[in-house]
Length: 420
Image 1 (tube, rainbow, N blue to C red):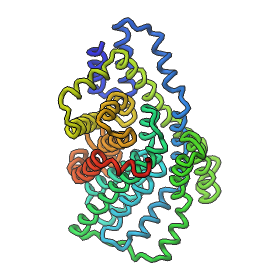
Image 2: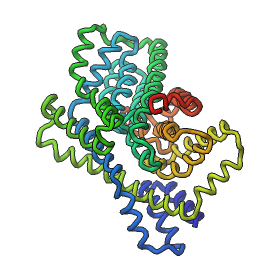
Image 3: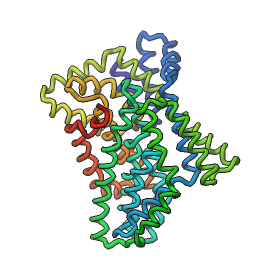
Image 4: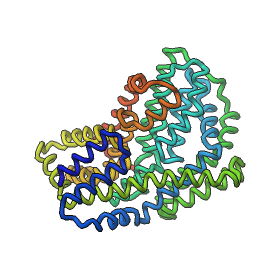
């Protein structure tokens, strides 16, 4: 059965079938070839979605859709520009800074890449920035949304492993900021070498004015983290609260959402939720079959038999996740591998919250690597830069992210300092 399950999975993936259908069809094929009653199919698909914590996903999707139409991206970019406008290559620094700030709002690396790219790439082209560098910076900075809370990937990991979503949100702040700062520093050296322009003087009055315009948007991640960590509401309730908050701010404070915009906002949120729900249900069925055949236990035993050196084992796990991230999006990868690899990491003394960030950072790098790097393809489409050229320009960003990944892997305090 294992051979049929994985063989069908690989063949369909190579053929370019959408990942949700790959997982479902592989599972159905394996069940038909074995003695499993087909009624289990509908039971497992329904049970996978019958989860209160998973309700946080459509609610955060709705909040993100509202914010995407509500002028929030522009205000955050203006605030970032008011801070770094007098530095060479200011627009590049704005992208890196905005990636950090926007990551705490949308929770989606791909959404942030699209939002940043649509605004910043045309402006950078006007000022003669290298097109490949601009696209790579946008793709890398946008991907931080997968790490900074309220990350959808962290929610999925928390539900899959029964870890505290509040702790995961707090743990994601430092790694996300470190990656953003790394991009900022690299962007500065590129700007110095290429002599990219400044964008005006920085003044306290200008910073204060732009901050006031963006304050309601910037308050969103604070509300979520403080509310969940303080026990005021759960992650699911937080999704509902932030969706209502986003609507009030966008409609009545920023006044950029009208009643006529609501059908499109709801449709976009429903479409995104449907895609993720399909993947969640199919992954749950696939994972259940793996567990029934005790494949996770076999993989765990194999890994532990390779070496008893914890450092080497953690490096092997990171390598596995990096390779998987090249072919699978973060959601299905987490649901498939977290039940397998989290126990292995736990046997090495790795905190579940720390390992959650290890998984998510690895899979974030996957957003920027071919052949299935979603953020990379979004940036390529917006900028017109070919994938091969963009991949070369992304190399320094991969190095920065892997450096932070190693810190998170071997320095637990980076993720657990505020959760213990």
